[in-house]
Image 1 (cartoon, helix red, strand yellow):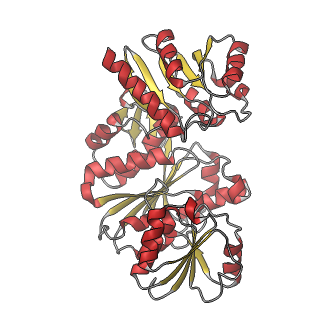
Image 2 (cartoon, rainbow, N blue to C red):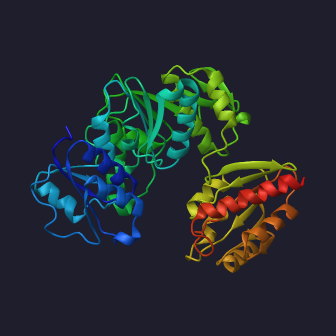
Image 3 (cartoon, rainbow, N blue to C red):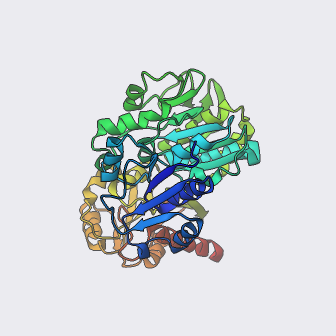
Length: 451
């Protein structure tokens, strides 16, 4: 298939880099183009690709670089769908695919693929599913996709009958043509990435492509409580199975504060550390996938009960003196913080603030009923302070997280939640939000060591 061809790769990053390596090893002529200047890109990747014989063009997208001599255009998922090279390739009848589609076509026969998508929860569900499957099947299980591991990077390791757990984004689904997961799950749908896919209708259509090549021998696992999920999948050919966090159904459901699978109790909610009903749904999805591979309840419970969440996303950190600490530093917008606040019934001391971007904290008000204290930090701390005062919630202002953390400890008591969910980007003080989260976790660790 991808041998002795002329192939154009649009965009470097991890996927372009991995695709180029695979293709050059198969004797293809490979031209890789990225609009960024060379000194802004990964120098080690560039050096390796040059030594392998990849032609690299950086800094612009010359009009004459792409012509009819190419057999494929492999587009980085982040490149706009209306990029001039994408439009030109279609005019020239050059197939436009991405690294996932290319790698899929190169997989050995008999590999089982689990594909997971949705607007929210797909990373948590993918990670949890992988952890369960890895516990059950060991080295036969691989993790790939939008979660940070290009499918190309595991091609040399995967064998017949192995299992690949994949997070699949809408940007990847846009250019998947033959990709065929044996088990596919959609967590939920709500408006997102409209800037990229131009409309919500198109976004939903693209998300539903995950099921496009499935047959009745394949399994589709769906959130029955999400109307858009059900509407978008009503014509798929897969065998459909459902989960619900609201009512008892013929599938996976929540009853008496426990998760059941077709009438059989699997795990109590008290054993689940990751907070919120949305994470109960993520657990349900992972359980349903695991059951398709005959994984025992013992293994499922062992993994779920030890799972602390995806790092920096409403991640359970630890409990000190009866106070539970959660790191949600990736909540860089109001919507994510709304989700975090709705995940707890206990009193919350929340750390809010960071980069000033004009975010409207008033949009948090319907979700603030359990908030007993607010710690305002960062560039926009004065606006957070004013917001807290307007709600008559005790609010304390500090420039730096480390100082605000000490106040959190002072004002909280056993049974409370201390939540870093800033509703703000971190660039006023940190290169990336993960550094902010790591600082929070370090403070929790230091506190525990003092006690």
